[in-house]
Amino acid sequence: MRVLGIDPGLTRCGVGVVDVRPDRRAVLVAVTVIRTPPSMPLEQRLLAVGTGIDELLDEHRPSAVAIERVFAQHNLRTVMGVAQVSGVALHAAARRGIGVALHTPSEVKAAITGYGSADKRQVQAMVARILGLAEAPKPADAADALAIAICHAWRGAPPGAPGPEAADGPVSLTPAQAAWRAAERSSRTSGAPRRLGR
Image (cartoon, rainbow, N blue to C red; front, side):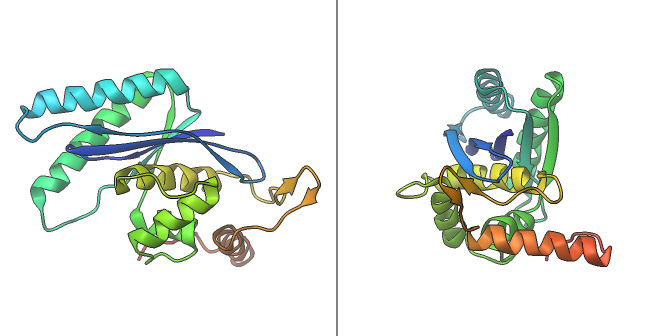
């Protein structure tokens, strides 16, 4: 599964693309940050972000798009910008017939670290570990976009998907993968819906 993850923002919009195999091993395909200056008119900023997302969708042809879900903040202006960029991304994906999923920050943190209240540093460290990188991409918006993409791919894996296999035999799950798989099994056993948000 190829997933394009988006951490929406007007000044910095993180975009990350990952390929995730059925055994949940993730590989970095691309990561970037689309930037627009606050001095630019709003409509031009949205156009620039939309054009950047269009180019990445056409270049990488993901099977799914994952976007961080807008949540309440004290700064209404920031929330509006995030919502506007999310709308641009939703439109770009829909125009291409690509399915879109929205994930809350808590869902992403739980999927990546096994802990829904993890801080940004912990998420970034796990993104680097999962993707086999020496360090997490910078700025944080880039790492966040990759985390969103990985979260979606792991959540979308079919129930009972096989464990990771290397060329020379089985390998261990990362702690985050093990925690996520345990949560999935618990949800299926109890029949309770999966809820990872705070």
